[in-house]
Length: 183
Image 1 (tube, rainbow, N blue to C red):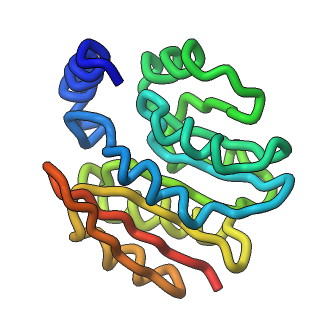
Image 2 (cartoon, rainbow, N blue to C red):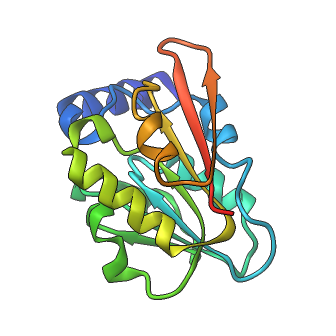
């Protein structure tokens, strides 16, 4: 990413700090890490919470099969428009809505979730409901992977998922990736 684009992204994320929960996009290390537990094979359904400017969306699309679909949720209309203009891929379905409304858009099973939404800005009830709804939609053996700047939300996931691991990604700031599996 060029310096100009990096500054533009930092400005946009800073302007929307209470929506994005970040000053800038996640690191390249996190982009790669969140894709380590994506399902392999044809006709998989992946859901992304918090698409932002699409850097993780691009990486997910690089890891899934040509017959799979990525449903990317984003509450900021401007971010949705930006991604529509920059990513041309029929597997990407952009949904301008919040993660709490995922079930309105996804009828069947989900094979994997990737999230970067800022749970610290949600009520405890809403955060728990998003995690529980995701668990309920997830196929057995599937993963919900969440990237955050804190490990304080880990208990929310451990209370719902069958198996959870936390990985710390060193950088400024430190980022944490939660890998939570439904068995």
